[in-house]
Image 1: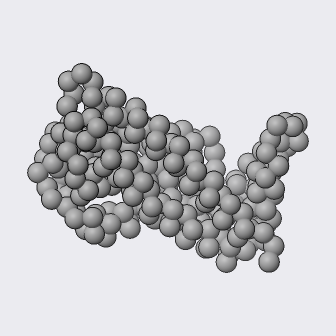
Image 2 (image 1 turned 60 degrees about the horizontal axis):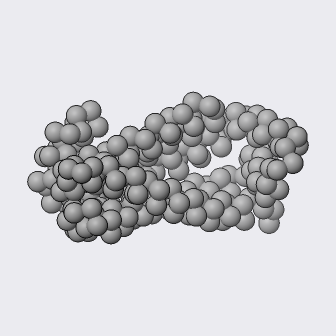
Length: 224
């Protein structure tokens, strides 16, 4: 693993300069970083569903109460929340474990999405096109988002706030990383233009993938 790992998140500008000199393979990044950090949101969901399930049930009840008064609320979302509540009430460990591994699988896919966006956008903004460098930026930048996933343990307003902060810092790291590692120039705001387009694409693609994940999770939650 990168020797100045923590510096990247506390002193990112200098650390990205040092990181640009490193040559990581995609395999090494997956084995040493992705497999570990991507498991945080997945296992946190599982812990929340088991040890802190009462908090989840309480929030679901609150959601369902508000949904009754909101005619525009998606019926599919309501049915999903009801199915999740029932699984928690039933203490269905098999379903909870299945959801954990499903979540883990989708988290493992996140760096592929972000790295692909970085790889194909970089040349358009006068940066270099390098798959391993793009993957390096994506993986190290996603660590705060994965770390924030620890807050899935407790389903509360602070969870959403920490997830927002983690995502915000991820894109901030990408903003710095593409300039230092992929040599996207800051002149004429090329790096700023890059991050705006990258954020839009990532959120759109993540939204589509999120819908797929939700649909698969719903199938797991349905009575057998």
